[in-house]
Image (cartoon, rainbow, N blue to C red):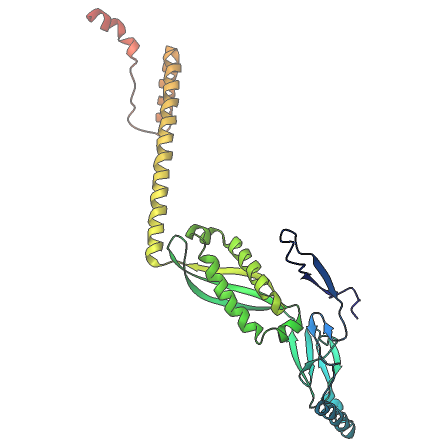
Length: 308
């Protein structure tokens, strides 16, 4: 049973004074409505209101019929709802007080009571592929999957005729609206952000229906063939340019290293001879029949000087 402080509604009523005070704010009177016997969780229940003679007569006949057909009427009057279901009962078209029944057994009168079962389990559905024009004028086809469940059976039955179909249509519309405000790069790289934005928007829109959207996921983003070829060419050109830059940087670093090595070797003639011997050793290790012996220029300098 709900406590007296729950489910009350507060209204702010403007109390207009005389028009002689135009510059003063109108005082507000706070009116608090506590839930009474004819109000359950914000839904008016007229079960305990004054009934007409026909309603009283129909109820009496239903009770008499139940007594006369006892114990067969037990199989008609007692209904069972499972752990994941709730039942919303109407008597003579009026919502019964007490809210949704279940899980377990509940009682209905034949001919005058009707009830609707609501499944509380999570339901998933696919949003059909939507052809959307992005903010940078690129046509993409995007589909998604939505997970939702019923968190308020009364709203799901009273506030909307078909919450499942309405949620599906709203999800498709929301997907188109969200993608229309994004660029192609944002659609391809920011799927998680788009999914979160859709979930928040759907949850706010379906809350009056008693529907809770738990998760939204973008499944696939399809691009036109021409756009795929253009993006592939752009990516290939970008990779080629990056490879050329890397090769040029390597050449620059290798030339700098060679210059530094030549400066070190030129400062010591013996180091140059050792380098020659190391080159001969590496050539002979390959079992080559031809050996190239470098002749140092320093050996010819005396003869070159005499000639000059």
